[in-house]
Length: 395
Ligand SMILES: *Cc1c(COP(=O)(O)O)cnc(C)c1O
Image (cartoon, rainbow, N blue to C red; front, side, top):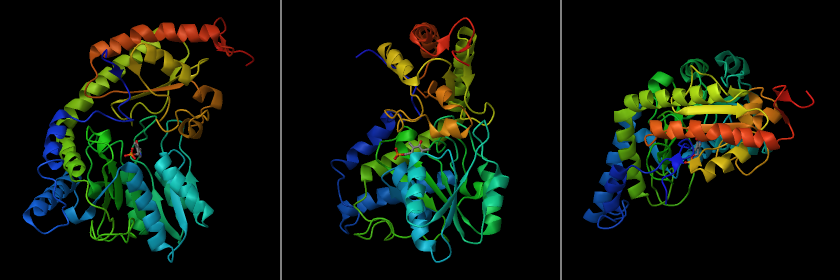
């Protein structure tokens, strides 16, 4: 297979070879169940404990505050449903933003159907939540605020520290979906003032199907999976030992090279945007340039559909995405872009490029070379594109 140019690191990343190597023994010779008491099992439970200590240290937490899960989706579900269940005698009001990942969004919608009340905070045109809006939305019966650290579609980085100060003052629990930032941005749970935080290994060059939920000691969280007594009786099920070992190893590596990766990726990302914006008319940047993940470029191209661009780029061996992987295949425009005030017909023309460790300058230059003719071809066929007037027909 020809080498693909992979510009979709926000949807997943390849497992680092060093991570894979660290995982391998735990599939075969060291296969013991960590819940058993003989030495083979003890070896496994020690590996899980060591991974827990590593993860805790890297986000400024205590080992007892780390719970291993099956990924970001489970961590988000647990934080929200576990809080709703445990705190419903205190209240039934939750606060979130309009641009959350579906793993948060759908939990909130589910709770709304079960008689909980949810305040959906707006974002500005750059995809940022105003902390003062959080303060204004707080009520005596508010049990949880859940705001993501960085948005997976437009890369905007939310003012978590400010929101954390507000929730702490009010004594309301604060959950953060940090799936896009763990391993990418420096992160300390005390400094951020968060009570719960979700992460997922496959977003930082670890394996798929394993993640963690950080929950501060004082957080009363209901058990999520019932069965054996794993994870201090809160999340039953035999530990995914290779996955957990891989998650910790991946996080260790990611934190070690965080600064240099960020600088390199931001430089390439800026080169990409410069190349695109110089060669194509009527393209726009989605989101904020300052408060933005270094690896994210999200754009919209007037007069063309995101899906068509994806398919034509794929024929050139380039992988990109239109919004999030989860909305691909549906014809609804991204809820994130709509919340930012982008009209639906423009939101349809969105494209997300997320860079990573494998991205080279040659990749970026190849993209800049093949993309303009693709846009030109699609615009020729487009019923909504008018080349001479640089506007959409009818407007
Ligand atoms: C990928 C992602 C998730 C889901 O994580 P999985 O491990 O794939 O379930 C949740 N939130 C955000 C922001 C994500 O980017």
